Amino acid sequence: MKMSAELIQNLNEQLNKELYAQYMYLTIASYFIENGYDGFGAFFLKQSEEEGEHAMRLFEYMMERDIPFTPMSIQAPPKDFASPLACFKTSYEYEQEVTRSYHALFKKVRESGEYDAEEFLLWYIKEQREEEALMRHWVEKLSMADENPAALLFLDKEARKAAEKEE
Ligand SMILES: [Fe+2]
Ligand SMILES: [Fe+2]
Image (cartoon, rainbow, N blue to C red):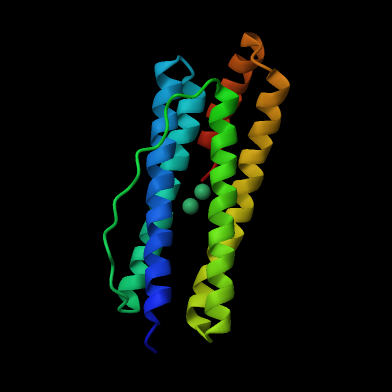
């Protein structure tokens, strides 16, 4: 079954969003490592790696379905964060934006009878639910720490443990 040009464009855009997330989390990791927060740095390196895997999963699906890949430029992410909390807030907001785009795409594939794409995209719907919950959890913790150095160092250690625990 041949996919519509619009859906092909949308899949390429999703792949670009995943690559942007990979680049954004790499940038945030650098912000943390350069500021002495190695644990948060490790956490965001792990997240960056996972976003790269999300992009690859889309790429492999596209190749399997004979869907042409269109290279697009990746925006430069911000790095001028005011605080560790600001990094997590930016990440949480971006995860919510990505969730919205997957939901919009899911609606379109369903309405166009693209059942195979629907089944494929379900993985991302679930993944986004988990990623939003993860970032929300850290936004809450960082809000409680309220820039208290001792609390931030404790959370930095916790973030390293979280990065090592996952998979
Ligand atoms: Fe992702
Ligand atoms: Fe994500």
